[in-house]
Amino acid sequence: MADVILVLNAGSSSIKFSAFDASDDALRLVLRGSIDGLYTSPAFRAIDGAGEEVEAKQWGEGTELGHGGGIAYLADFLRGHGEGHRLIAVGHRVVHGGVRFTQPAKISAEVVAELASLSPLAPLHQPHNLKPIQILAQQRPDLPQVACFDTAFHSAQPETAQAFALPAEVTGRGVRRYGFHGLSYEYIASVLPGVDAQAAAGRTVVAHLGNGSSMCALVAGRSVASTMGFTAVDGLPMGTRCGNLDPGVILYLMDELGMDARAVEDLIYRKSGLLGVSGISSDMRALLASDDPRARFAIELYAYRIGRELGSLAAAAQGLDALVFTAGVGEHAVPIREQVCRQAAWLGVALDAGANASGGPKISAPSSKVAVWVIPTNEELMIARHTRAAL
Image (cartoon, rainbow, N blue to C red):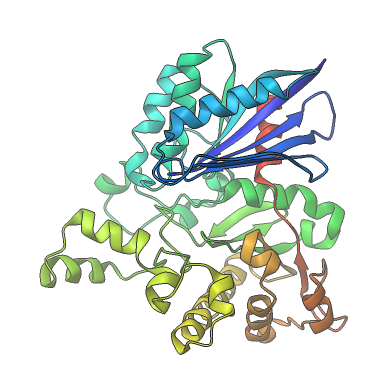
């Protein structure tokens, strides 16, 4: 009987899952899928390691399954399709680890309580990340659970890269730059030596571009600077998040428009970014397919900000040997990669248009002073690795 590690990534209305064969040194993917629309119109889909659909189910409009019902359904599904497999642990993606959690942590009541106290730092993610942990702790207290943090990979950054220019009585409360998407960057750092040894040993900027977007500078595989800071709303414009914003704008919104903290939170997390600028969609695919000038401007602004941050991160790394695109937009949006590389010509980036159109993996021209790669990320595998190590 093969041991299996289950990886869960819970959002506000969805649960993504992956099951890995823990008896396989490579942690072979056995199953993956998701339950979406947990509170409106739930839909379940599971795919095996070969990419074949195993099961699909829809509950219909107006059905509220919730996280508890979703976990219960997933547990029943796994029992029904788990012949020859034994679940030995569950690994969870948790966005914020705060100052204390700089390594994966085994779940206990104390750990859950401390992670819950960090929810104001990641209000869109943290409470939902913790729901399956709490449910499983009640239903299966014997089952080991491990929390893996998006902030942990950045914890070794230089102190100056983590500090805000604020009084000590404020920064002493944990107000600092944490950085996020660390599991994705850690995975890229782990596979980069096999892709480009020079980049792995040198200075690389990784662009994790998706509905949530950020960038990170790596030197010899270690994070030295990142675009996200105290919260996951900082840095690049994203699907619905504004990214970097002058704090004075927040004061203006409160003083002149009468917005309270919750209204500002809703604006900068849910109504800004690509959606807010375009007025059309938060989905890059929809914007690239649109002829609307507002969509074109949103795309131009997104690419421009990536270009600016690339220059900043290259300065933090004191040079640039490689640029890596990853995540949904980074891996699939050919025009975005083209615009970013064109803007980065001053850094020595030269794009191979044909290689870019075909998805690479190497999309830089032979004359390019900077190697440019497209490398799919795999946060779930990284979580499975951490979970197995924690056991």
